[in-house]
Length: 299
Image (cartoon, rainbow, N blue to C red; front, top):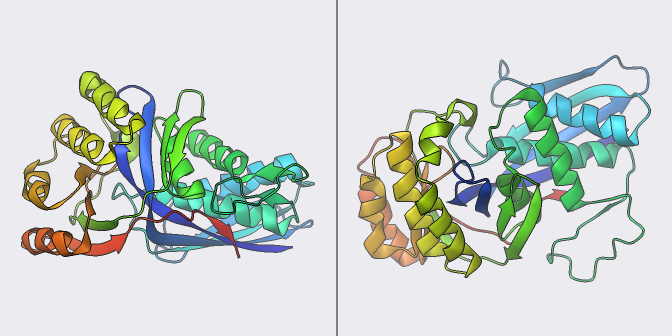
């Protein structure tokens, strides 16, 4: 009983911490998960390739939730391998959860329907579960182990479905999803920030700006939504706004991603190379990549 799946990381359009409504888009960096199940195994053991001593509770809980719903008490192992840096605001937890849930479903032989428009002719009427429903399993697992404040359904949905999404994280409902094809530039400084440690009360003080960013996103103005969000949440969470200001002349939009510390800009590759030259003077890593409309997949 073996399954394998992959899911992308994501960048922020609107942080959901202030109002419960968030927006995010998939990035072309991936986490893969391999799940092996055994009816005779006792419990689930996790392993993170890049961090042998890392916290495996999330991926273990994802397997447990899938087995509770679709299996028959199987235990086993789950191993993840990722290009998404952890605790950097690039949705590494959502990518790991989505990949693990899909891999566990695959190991159990569960029929999963891709209900994003990446497979326009998909017929989910006879499927046991859809990608969106599978995404919610990972979100609940994240809440179970306390690695998220909001449940991060916006991040998880962007990773699972691809494109750009707007979600209500208080009800785990999808308000919109569109294709979102742009080049993307990511700057990740050396420090790390954990979502569960974010100052939620301080974030709620910027709710008027978050509401404005949500309105812009629902109107399809994702670039301006990103920039409004990035300035507001950088101030609320104590991150510098200088990287965003440096990017503004040459990008469609720029934002602090998640609760930081990464900053993501989207636009045209030639313009973003000028931003990269400025950001490269800063400590950390600067990577030019792309957004992507294809979300998670079962391998």
